[in-house]
Length: 87
Image 1 (cartoon, helix red, strand yellow):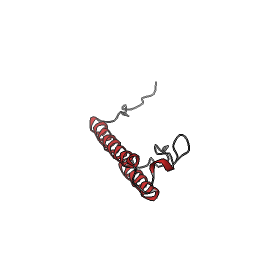
Image 2 (cartoon, one colour):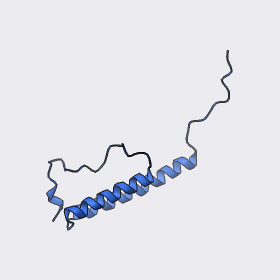
Image 3 (cartoon, rainbow, N blue to C red):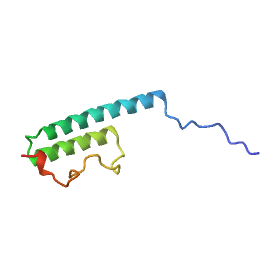
Image 4 (tube, rainbow, N blue to C red):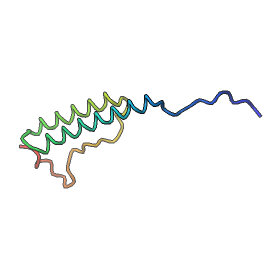
């Protein structure tokens, strides 16, 4: 039987898990705040789009390398209507 060497742990450290949880909480707070501002209305469509873009940029800062991850902010609501939240 061949010797395979020392086992390499692929599990993240407690610090790594805590750090990812912290970043996830921060992202959840940012997305919730941006969503609330948009749903409250009063923004022009361009302002709302800029807020979504800024939120996405911050998400990518918090989780670099996830550019290809499916977006959580669709450009249209379930009915396809985008106008109900904008002035």
